[in-house]
Length: 131
Image (cartoon, rainbow, N blue to C red; front, side, top):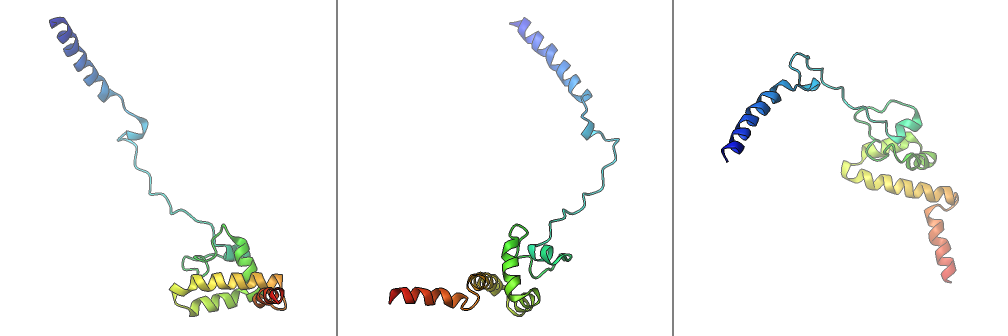
């Protein structure tokens, strides 16, 4: 039993001495720390991409037209125009803007499908079939 304890005691200091000599290249104290990373540049909103303009930090359109949904802005832009969309959003309180954008996109989509009646055309056709 004494033999096992002696070997364990002899092995313990050897591993303790070996661990400080292992230095990883990233933890080296002689390497100066790099400057902080620049902020991540996100892609511009779909509206700014389509209008080919710079998307500023306080872009009114960015929260409602994400870069992943360019068709959403394209549809609304064809019917209402970018300046009218921006004016409307600026006049509304922030809590109503998302609903307004959804309504504009819905109405623009209906207007593109039925240029004469728009949203009402769908209701009219449904009421005529019920007669």
